[in-house]
Amino acid sequence: MFGYILKKIRYFSLKNKNEYMLQNTKPGKNNSEPISPYLEKNLEVIKGILRDCSDLTIHEFNFGRDRRFKGALIFINSMVDKEGIHKNILQPLMYDALLLQDNVDMDFTKIDTIRKNFISITDNLKVTLLSDLLDNLLAGASILLINGSKEALAIKSGKRESRSIEEPGTEAVVRGPREGFVENVKVNIALIRRKIKDTDLCVEKFVIGEKSKTDVYIVYIKNVANPKLVEEIRRRLKRIKTDAILESGYIEQFIEDSPYSIFPTISNSEKPDKVAAKILEGRAAILVDGTPFVLVVPMVFVESFQSVEDYYARPYLASIMRVIRFLSYIISTLGPAIYVALTVFHQELIPTQLLISIAEGRERVPFPAILEAFLMIFTFDILREAGVRLPKAVGQTVGIVGALVLGQASVEAGLISPIMVIVVSTTAIASFAVPAQTDSGTILRYIYLALAGIAGGFGIIMGLLATLLHLASLRSFGIPYLWPIVPLDFTGLKDVFIRMPLWTMSKRPKAIVWENYDSYNQSPGLMPSPYKKDKSDSK
Image 1 (cartoon, rainbow, N blue to C red):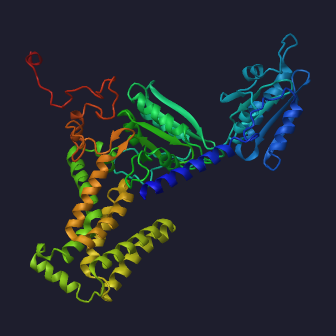
Image 2 (cartoon, one colour):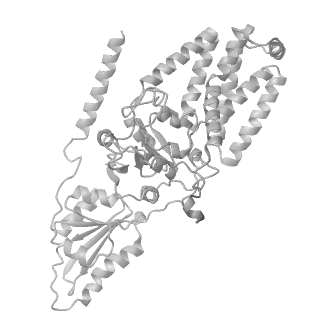
Image 3 (spheres, rainbow, N blue to C red):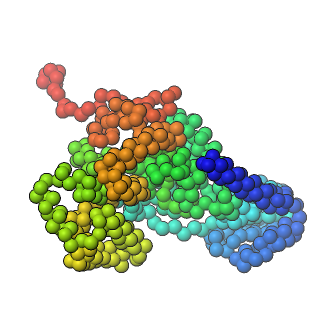
């Protein structure tokens, strides 16, 4: 039965894929005609293709010493800097060329001549195909066409509005840099280069999306990142065939190892210092234009409990906070389930006085404990979602007032027991301690609660066993998801449950670093010590 269903799913997947490939290989779908040497013909073709674009501007002009050469500048009004176009493109061609001496002989029908002598904008590209011309035009470039030339010049004179660099709201820190990524991918690459001033830092560009043509970059350090890892990222990116990539989450869902798993196998961050630290370990970052969230691969499970601030503070408090994060994740996923299992199936494990208090609190409650817990957790998720989606000022009010009013009213009406309010409130607070695993924690909370309501402690144990088996089977670009716990690596354990001093962590992660490269990221023996006088100093 299951084999028949899988065959049907595979059949329809292949059928849809073949239909998509046929649709996108129709004649005329991709215009790859060469640029004509006749200016009028080129303009006629462009006007025909973009006939419904009211913001398209085509400026025809004459230039040269005797103004016998014809040219045209094409651009999208809303995407260029008109002042820069006039100053750096039109003025040199239309006015500065008049000042050339008679003995200077230039062939203005050659794009290379114009680019080298008159265009002061360094970001320009020579194109020979009509499809490349249109791609650059729609990306914000100004296109310079010359009558008699089979080439065109795409000049990046675009003007792009972008918000200023500020502290990201999702990864606030007490100590450390306050800058965060923005929606402009070039600014994001510059932020990484400020952290890693190394000639081996590589930046590779891909254009993904049949209609959006989104710029996607891979950033890694050559000779530190494993070449097989980089090649695998290239392969997965190249196989993406879709209309649009609007956010890095699109890329994540297309390249992750286990798409049906509730656990993320690709990490993301808004902080340049965090991404730079991971790149220095041998990982690779994937930057997508239009989003401040940068993807980093590979990822291991314990990364979710690490904060970039852990490495800026001394190890004692950082280690305590890391243990608290692990305990918070356990409480957020198992708290309601353990309460239901104890009160329904294992009352003998509860101290007598506490059991009496729980019984008194549940005396007026008409619902069983499992339904009571589900209602409370579901209500909390509604309040959390409403607080996120509403405007900031209103959302905070809804979250605080809604929780207080609903909780107090429910207890007074006898619908919910006071102990359940405490359990769910503690669970809710603990769930915010590990943002990277919020999705998995929310899903596991419902699963464990259902198992506890069905089989008590035995159901919870079975659920934990299935979760651990699933985690042990996961891979992130070939790296075991539970490393360095499974497989066990004592060197890697220095940065898992506690954070050892930085001077003890002299090696890059063994599972990530390339074998043919020096695995040391710092010199060994850097333990600080006070200066000791020797006998020569006293003389």
